[in-house]
Length: 263
Ligand SMILES: Nc1ncnc2c1ncn2[C@@H]1O[C@H](COP(=O)(O)OP(=O)(O)O)[C@@H](O)[C@H]1O
Ligand SMILES: [Mg+2]
Image (cartoon, rainbow, N blue to C red; front, side, top):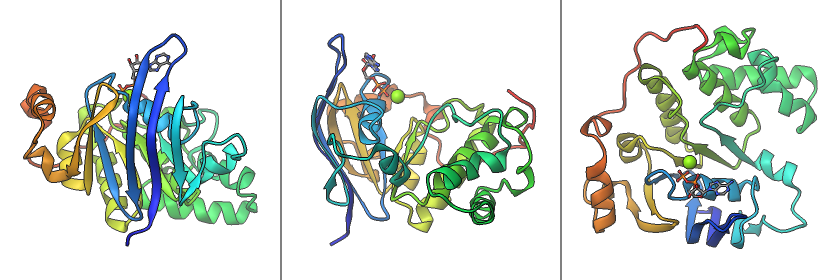
């Protein structure tokens, strides 16, 4: 039996004001698995991720990490966030810190590493995302694709048990998307456990082991990533056909030359 890393059971989220954004969602992510969540805007994808790492508290339901419930009043949220990495659409790097310091900050303050240890760990993850040559740059002098790779390195440095991505390429210019998707694909091949919200349907199909299609706060269809080519439900069929054809190319985008200026 594969080890169950992340489990969500009957999750509900009703926002103050009454929007019932998530309406009874259950799924799990096994060790070494990449699971993609797809679905139209407003279907509740980000809400699910925010409930998992406790940026918001679900109205109902259980979130467990390696068999232990983590949405309880006794859960140490800082410790939890070091076990569950998160990469956002908007990078969320510290603008006043150099690339290297963005990555060492959590290692020093949360992991309590020495300066030398933190630097060594940071350099190894920055090498993995191909950013070793920019360790002294400030985020403002990086392209969006480079910033996102630094954000991924920062999450990886903490050696999380699972990594969550919320539309990691949706703020990027088309020519910068490829390097970020390639980085995530590399992590999938190395066996990183990941839950990836993405609107890159061909990426989900080619890289994820399983796909969850969300519609109006519920899981409307889920299965192996082949369901993208062979959807069963009318709702998933309709969603896929609503996408422009150029969003479902045969292969992951290749990146051209990456600009270095602030975008
Ligand atoms: N902070 C919030 N307060 C109230 N409603 C929200 C909030 N965040 C999201 N929503 C609503 O919850 C629903 C799901 O949003 P979201 O999880 O962001 O969807 P997705 O990520 O799939 O686009 C939407 O109707 C959205 O307007
Ligand atoms: Mg979202």
